[in-house]
Every structure is written in C-alpha cells, then in structure tokens.
Image (spheres, rainbow, N blue to C red):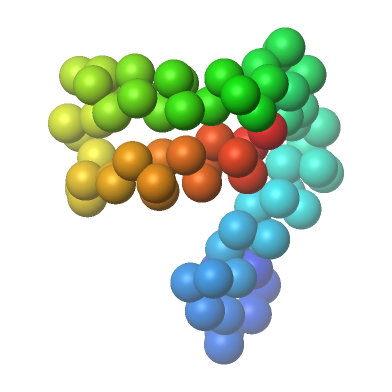
Length: 72
C-alpha cells in the first residue's frame, strides 16, 4: 500500500517514505541544525524516553541511530 506495489518488501518502505517526505516538503533534521555528531546523544536520550515504551517493538541503540541518520 505504501509503495503502490503488491509485491513490495519491508526494505522498500524506507525509499517510499523518503519519496513521500520529499513530495510533502518535509525537511531533514539537518535543516534544524542537528549534525551527524549529535546523533549518538539523541539516540541515547530517545532510548531513555518514556514515549519509547509505547513502541510495539524495542529498538536497539544501533537501530535508533540508523533511523536518525536516515532523517538527517
């Protein structure tokens, strides 16, 4: 549904979301002054945030960092 293809795989979601963000004009974290060297600290704080308890799965620190890198 997200990709528009019935044969889409989970790894197709990232590029599809990137295209959607570009179409909607959603800016990356870098446009807010966040730098690559800031990401480990942000990931560490996100891991401790109470809102993370609402996630259906627990994200590993490296997964959080990867998500932030994609959002940069």
